[in-house]
Image (cartoon, rainbow, N blue to C red; front, side):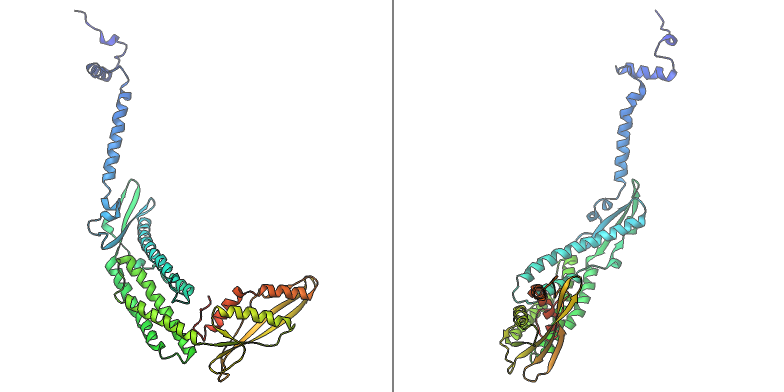
Length: 385
């Protein structure tokens, strides 16, 4: 029998290699370096270890609705992640809970806004929408808690779990609603007795509107966190609609007379009076300039002021003051101005052309909010911004 000299074999120079080669021969594998055959095994091991690391993260830190104690029907939950610190992860979790509430509030607000714009009973729609919108913010970070036992660090990331109790936050909003409702209902009860005192009626009307805007905003928040309105909200909505009907009746019964004081040049009178009358028609009913019993007087005193500008030529500006009075007693109810920086006319050479430019700049759109602001201190017209 011929004996093989292992030492002279070209591939068998090390003891470990001898064993490896026998394994290779046994399984009929090609004669490849051992490290190449080991590479797939290392890859599989890495995948296995990564899978184990993933499974080490609690389910509720992968899906906020999977927490065994904080169920979504009772809590608003969120996960916060950070690669810097646990504190930042917790802040991110709280912010995410707050964002969820904000989104739900905004969704209900948009639906309500569409309804209000289509409701012909409400005269001052834009202001009501604007007031409610400013009060729909959610600022209750102190009620958003962190589950300290549920925080962890895995795969180089800090994870935190935040929750907000739907019942607790609903209770806070309900208390705020009850407090605001006292003011609202008191104003509603008083307004029916004030129809003969227009300034008092108007001030009470604005109190009704503003306090109802607070109730409406709180209702959005309550529905967003708990899926239900305040139990008294439907009744308060009916009260508000009743007040808006009363407001329409009061406005229909009002008659206003517009009188314009002397102005130079005379041709300016007709132009200014025409634009003022057109602007007032969007707010109140206007009758011929005869002040009789039961009517109200708007006496407007205009003045055109000239400035001989040496660089730009003749320049003129318009200023107007208004006296609001009762025709029966001539009692002054309010005084205000109708001045705007754009009521100016300039021409390089001619005063007549400068005056024409001034008249072009006096628009109904600019006069309307000025009149709204002045008149709404006494009459239940649309309020200016």
